[in-house]
Length: 604
Image (cartoon, rainbow, N blue to C red; front, top):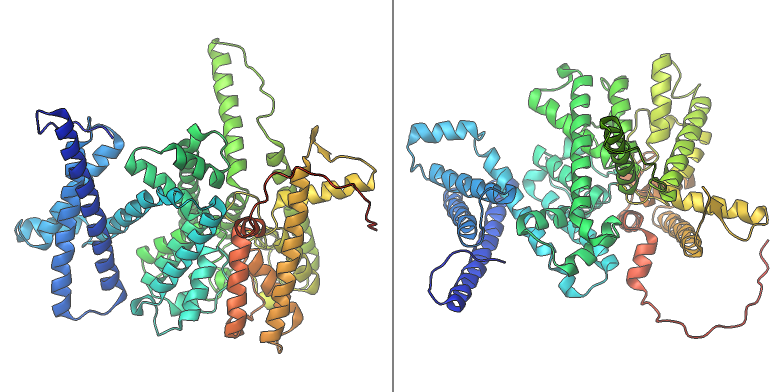
């Protein structure tokens, strides 16, 4: 940290004084941000007595002024230039917060205050800003997590657990629901949202208010990308730097080997997410009938909610019957947009970044060649084996799923639909079990062959580093390649002129074994807690929970408390990964300096 302000002539004394100022400033901003956020939640979550509201509003305004002054002091003391994006944003935040507090105290006069209120949509802008500020402070705090000396795997798991508990608390607030709900139902909904599953024990459209639906949307947005990705990006942006410990700690979450590219990779992930979700929200808005909504605000929220839910493979909908709702079930263009978002979200960020590098190389190389700067140079290995395996496996699974759905459902859910409707429904029917969870048909009318292929597609799930869960496409591909290699008598597994490492093969086998054990044990427990349910329905529910899909044959709301707790655990395990949990729990053995004699075990 470089301090630019000079108070004392003695340099050492000046530095010590300014460091104390910065420490006080940071604490003032942190405490008042938490206080303002708490007051905001209190106002949003409870029906408040007018007398109490006056007192809390005054305290809220005071917090805004102190936060604004805190940011201004930081810029004055630390920053050498005000022309960087971060510094200008901090100055703008400072100005907005102070002006808003003065407006709330009516210091600027009635006419000016009313003009500012109209511009800021009657405090909605400042309320959103307070939420952002709280998240910024949380992000800065997250950069100190590495000081706890916990393994990245354990921190990754705990981040989901903490977010689930916070979400459950927010959904338990009186103003988040239209009627009182039990904590178990709030916890189940929060777990389903954070783990981007979509299984619901309550009707998102009828049982949750707008505030509750916004909370659910934020939960699956953060849960889809991972809270560490969000907090690391914003923590760096507003703190201004990463320590080497931060870089080494964060790289495991985003599969980035080059520690110097951590922020660039995070920026690409966030930018790609915002771009896709924004584009899909615009297209959903365009392809839905405005008459189906109570107003333009409702229409915009519907579009944004479903775009984020689709990209995050969450499967939540603000429609009681999902996309099968009357008036939406034949919006085939909208279905294709959501299917597009699901595929992009489930393909995995490593694949997206890999193709970004490839396209960048092609465009830059072609431009240099056209301008005569240098000849186009072909660079090998831009598209990695992982990328090819994921893309090919995804394409094969989608193709097989589409064909099977079209054949097995022609006299069932596809009956009576137009040719275009059958095509789109078949495409969507192949995409949605890939951890998405949306339904454009009545799930209870599916034929047995479709249910069976759904079980398989749900088990495989999305791709590594994506917003989805499941076994993962690359794991399944490696397992199949290993099977074919053994059958053909090969001593090694080869694909795309590369050899798959033994460590990868061992991990694939371990993940498959653990997934079967978790799902089998889950079915066993659910049949104990709810023996009256059909085995097929229970198996479908457990597969859906483990793979964070969210599709159901209609039994979720009928489950007992014990079954709900089991499904919550399975959703969390499916989202963070069985191997991740095993690595976090089991202590690593040091280097083995011995080797036993080998012996063959018969396997047929």
